[in-house]
Image (cartoon, rainbow, N blue to C red; front, side):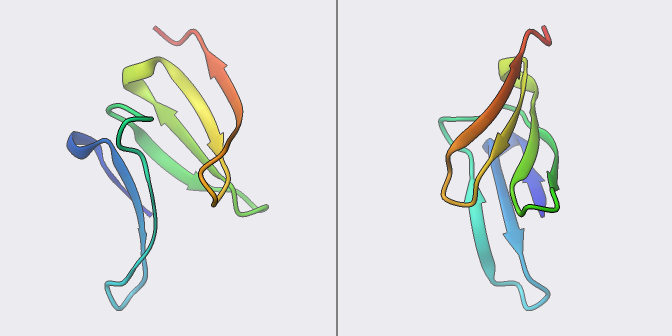
Length: 69
């Protein structure tokens, strides 16, 4: 899992360099530290929007904490 902060994009890439999953443009802004949780959702610190979100692999935000600004 990589966070391309200047592109507002998170990508999961396997060891062969294949892109397995992406999330981000238009939804997150200047994000940090994407973490895959045991249930295969992804926790993201969305710095530019002042929140933390939890996202499913089909791009649904299932949890959000606001107010980090």
